[in-house]
Amino acid sequence: MIPVSLLLVVVGGWTAVYLTDLVLKSSVYFKRSYEDWLENNGLSISPFHIRWQTAVFNRAFYSWGRRKARMLYQWFNFGMVFGVIAMFSSFFLLGKTLLQTLAQMMADSPYSSSSSSSSSSSSSSSLHNEQVLQVVVPGINLPVNQLTYFFAAVLVSGVVHEIGHGIAAIREQVRFNGFGIFLFIIYPGAFVDLFTTHLQLISPVQQLRIFCAGIWHNFVLAILGILALVLLPVILLPFYYTGVGVLITEVAEDSPAIGPRGLFVGDLVTHLQDCPVTNVQDWNECLDSIAYEPQIGYCISASTLQQLSFPVRAYKRLDGSTECCNNHSLTDVCFTYRNNFNKRLHTCLPARKAVEATQVCRTNKDCKQSSSSSFCIIPSLETHTRLIKVKHPPQIDMLYVGHPLHLHYTVSITSFIPRFNFLSIDLPVIVETFVKYLISLSGALAIVNAVPCFALDGQWILNSFLDATLTSVIGDNDVKDLIGFFILLGGSVLLAANVTLGLWMVTAR
Image (cartoon, rainbow, N blue to C red; front, side, top):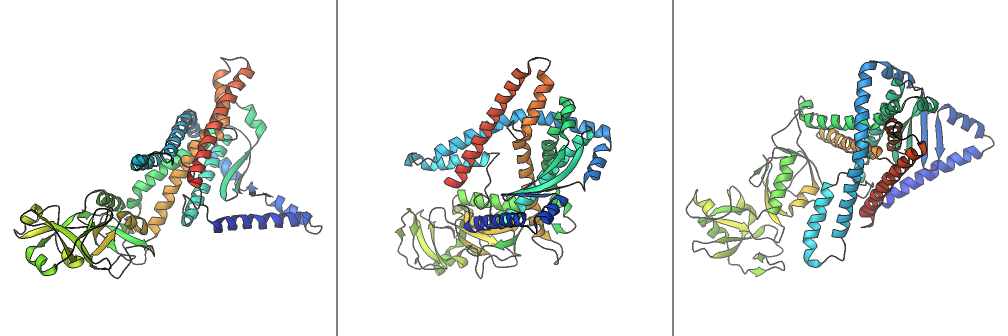
């Protein structure tokens, strides 16, 4: 559910703004001066909507739109081709997303048989990961602590989108009245005010260049974001280096990694078990392999095993695994191994003494290379639980016992290590996170606006495209308008179905 605190802030804030606006407009003393102030500053206020428009940037827009006219002509021609292709491709993308959502709903249905629950879960997970478009609801599938990134990326994407429309309009000799920014509930956006009469007088192809310019600029912004993300290590090279491990930037208060010999902010992790970690991708891949592969073992000499072990009574846990230590022990772990007669035995050992300064193994054969009298002891833990040796020199290795995903979700890391002590370890993470949001949101804005749907850019792109292509083929404008109406209706229904089911999947489950 959406956090109550977030709802209270949003509803309370808008109630205060609306009531203040209502009181001032109703006041005998302040009504005239307040309305003049709103008009002079280009402000308008309505329920859950604030709009600001200015002509301050008009000179800059005209300068951009009239500079290098031939290059801009080719630039917006590329945008026109992209926009038309994106408009028709959006049907396929929305249709595919809708089918994926329906398949996920069926997989998550409570009527599914219990015998296929695990396969359904993995199937729905894979479908969820493959979806290109997904409804985002702050506080549910968008963490509240990342709202700043989200709204900043939405605003930047919207501004770039409208700059595309404005420059293209000036290039096509359409009068530019002004630029503005709005806030609808909690979502920021931008707009340009064009002279409608001029827009209707130009040719359909010229209109197409203007209407496609917004999504074209969003697409280019997403590509530039991807390029910046790839080149980020090079860009930050004078201040941060990479390729030697991952730096701990935050450890959650409830993380199993907290403790005297746990992980701390500023620690540099170089290995998870025998898996080398040089960057964030390595960290994630190592945790995935540890989670899905059998628990790895550790070589221990026969003399050390005899010295550390003591008589135990083994018993089965509910999940079928074997336990042989005191349940309340924080330092001892039950290990299993095979002796020289290939008999499986269990022993309770102090974990740190048993696994420290030893090589990893799968069977006794892996240990015979170093010593003929060595055994491979493997922790006997509950299903999905792993013992993981985390190397973060110069500190002593952390021994983590738990689900690998808990380590993944409760420890924040970065691949960027500061070259100087005064540099923030959070700066690369902030930049990287913002760029990722910018890529996804600018790309999503391009895709959604390309949909031939009422009130979106896709509506005007479709109308201009039909005017440019069908006027010479179909003489009757009513027939052409009817074709456009049914295409718009189909796109609107498809988009509405995706949004409705997407919201239901996010909020109602």
